[in-house]
Image (cartoon, rainbow over the protein chains, first blue to last red):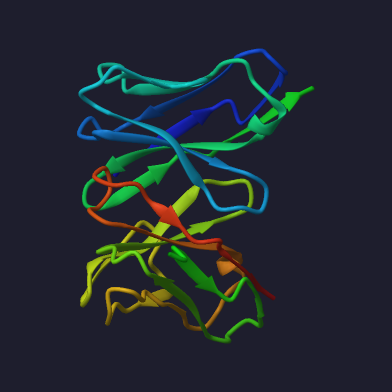
Length: 111
Length: 114
């Protein structure tokens, strides 16, 4: 089955700096790669996703890149703000209607 | 729309007890899912359903059962609760399956088994 590794597990940045979170996956058949943000005690919320026919996607301060050959994808957050502080999860689809999630990255943005 | 509604929000069970976690959605979504999230970890799929009357196992189905008698409801049953089932349980739904439409999550049920 699919295996998704996520790094780093914690990330601390100064407000205004950029943050990068990286994920690797094992199943070359995966085609869909979403990113979720989860604030403390809240539900996960989709922030951006990318499909295998696209190498990069941007939405304001958030971007995701995908390298299918290397089987890795990354989340980039620019001009970080304190409200970006949360746990971020990457995921990849696999056989059937399944999403395999990474272990999460706790992002702390210091004002 | 209320979206995905889960009840209860919190529950403490003794070892060996059973309970049903309720999940209902009012978005007419065909696909529904149950995930568990252990402390500091990502979500793992327990069971999912592609429509009323159809259910399938996910990554971690042991110790759980589900049913899908209506489009709206997807209850998760725990029989003989064990401490290893202490977790936060999230129900989710989407219209057209993974990759074709976004997942909508409920607010979660925090379960402790002691």
